[in-house]
Length: 277
Length: 249
Image (tube, rainbow over all chains, first blue to last red; front, side, top):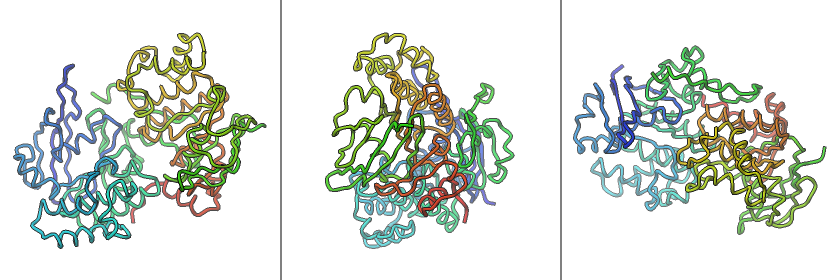
């Protein structure tokens, strides 16, 4: 397998008045054309890891790594211009909530065309044509109508599909999905995942799927990284999830209530300080 | 057993949109009742109608046998029925300390002995006294939801309306809050009406549940029936499949 992304000892820290907050503390992994899940609770650094790869960490934060290599390009020493060329074209990111992450004053169609026009020399007619084709690929039934709608006029599930369309239209090699379905209804979640599943396998992309839902991630990805307090506590194959060794992984698996299981009270995580060491 | 909450043929209309159409439910005293459905199914509207926050156009709502009139609710009503909202980031006043937040319901209802009650309320939801003079932004999501629960419980209600109390929380924190709610229900013999889109959560917490779609109840069943997959409606079955997670094609 060719390596798409090589991350070694990635650190993200935020200097504040009361001291330095280390959000990510030495994360290493490699990614090929596969699906990698990053799981953890809020504050575990999972989103920060994704954002650092994308280059979306705020200016005042300090990002360092022994290696942050995307297809031979060193992301840390890349200039802002170089990163702009990568962002959206070769690395794309789907965000959590379509309500907040789409531009509210721009129609869906224009937002999708914008991505395309930024990265490729295309005429207006061709851009529209490709945007419509992309909307169709994410299974929006009436692309012509949705093209002219504004984000507030469409449902959450449709918004998320539009965002996926926007991210995939430039044909990226790596897609980072940060909790892409957490803001959606359970029934819509599966539809969106199915679309992502299909497009990712058809186009042969690498995928980093960031989520707090271990079960969902393990059913969708090939490999899962479990993060706690900015570190990787366990890395395992999704199929081996039942044999998870770390108590934190086991805790995350056990704390979800399930239909047909009567466990009162539910097992909760007994967080141990040595996990964060 | 008398019904703590009985809703008969309730209709709610926003302008010309029928959010609820002839919905009837009955929740016995001390029961825990779940409402499931996707966004827009009317499950939250039903709770809000009971709390007087939605325009009721037809039907009756009874609390402990007493019919409620219009959208106005008496103080006595709010002492016996309290609500916990979905988003703990939006439901606490950002510029009030936890102490102030918990004092307000006591002041409104003219309940004395506030010092001891606030201390006990915080204690009950597993937050120490150290949280008393903090602001909401200094707390995590789970801690905030605990404060919201404490605020609802401080006037000693008998019915608690829970609108997706854990859907904004991490799975691990969700387990803690669900355990807390169960324990409180046992200790105080409360009646719960809980709205959620997560069938797992609802079957865990509730004995009986109603599945809603498009402003109407499509199926009523017990958690045991759901666990056996003894369901009639295709819609309920779809929800069950969805809650099992993604299956690779």
